[in-house]
Length: 329
Image (tube, rainbow, N blue to C red; front, side, top):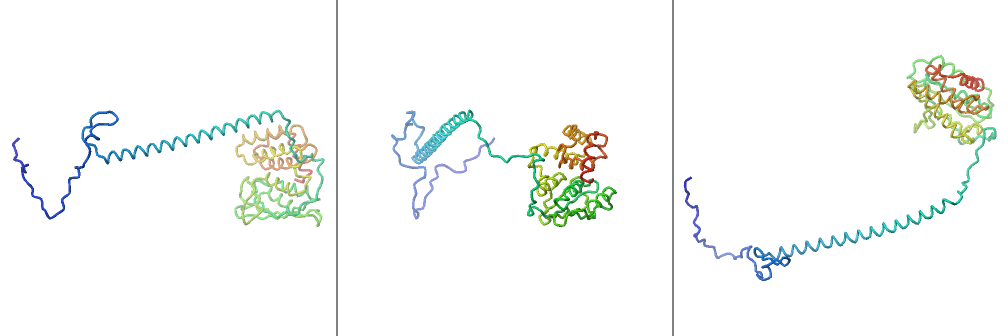
């Protein structure tokens, strides 16, 4: 490598102008060499002069850190105090519960449930009666409407009017027979309370719909749920919720709903066996009296009998025959 001459000599004197105010170098400051010559904590000699501004910044940071630690300690102390009070309350509640466990249970006033034989025919509340629309598929005929129309002929007049939606090109013979039966004028008295039902044959599958408010269009899906609705607003002697076996009736109605809406044949067979076990050797699910469960069961089996006909035992056939004779199915 070759040598290169210095670009600028260090001994060059630069003349400063005298027309401007002279400022001392920034790195130059006045300090006490004795005060900052050694570290106050370790006693070691410092490597060089210490900036007072750095000392001030360190003091401020140390003060802020001490304040934050103090606030954190106070907050932790308050939390510990609240936890101690909460523990004290829990222990007192635990002691109180142990004492109350040995006390006799309080008797809750409940509405006494009745058997169907004890139910009396009360006047129908006319404010609960309102016209509604039912959307049903011709493949799943809602036989329960015809059953209630015939059973309530002395208490309530169900007037059914049928229409066909554009999604249904042609009605089956089964649907036509049902339509003729349900729209036929019966022997109901003219002074009876009335509910007008508009039945629309529509391609809705097994999910029969009931619409009480056409403006809001909030349907009640499922034939058994329509039965539940009608049992509440219809004659009181058919309201199963006032009977003493309301839980059992609800479970049977739910099984009838699943029997209709389960498309798998094996699932339908399993549900049918469950219903057969509940029926047992009795004449009906409600005993000697015709119940809402008998109507729901008969209607559901008639709608899916193409897939479960061989699984219907003789006692089920007997129950369905009794419903057909009494309800005019």
